[in-house]
Length: 128
Image (cartoon, rainbow, N blue to C red; front, side, top):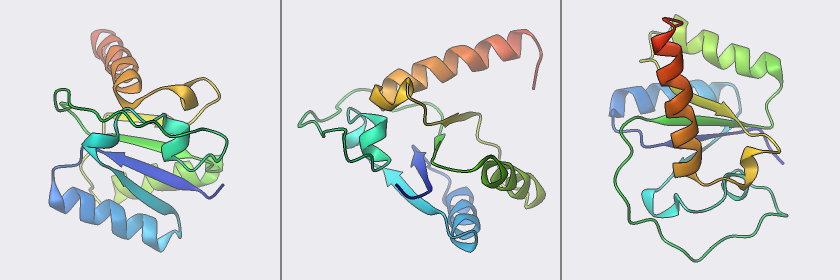
């Protein structure tokens, strides 16, 4: 499975273009996840062959924030992405996750809810 970054709910064209250019320069695959595919398991979206697709189509509410999911990246690659985003002044993405054995079976809304809860706790604890 290739190194991949899943991009979910990106509305800001400038931010999206800057992230695409950065990932392209690092030779990391990028995949835009369409709203209709939010009920697919994250592992499937990331290219895990052993996870099957679903026929279900998401028709729920739009997500409030954008989300990035990092799949199959080395720690150094992940650090480089985050560093380049800061260095190049790319608008911060609050909801970021690494694909794990636990969340590979989750859907986009399930992970989003988890990240929203974590983000809220961090804000309350004033950790940025």
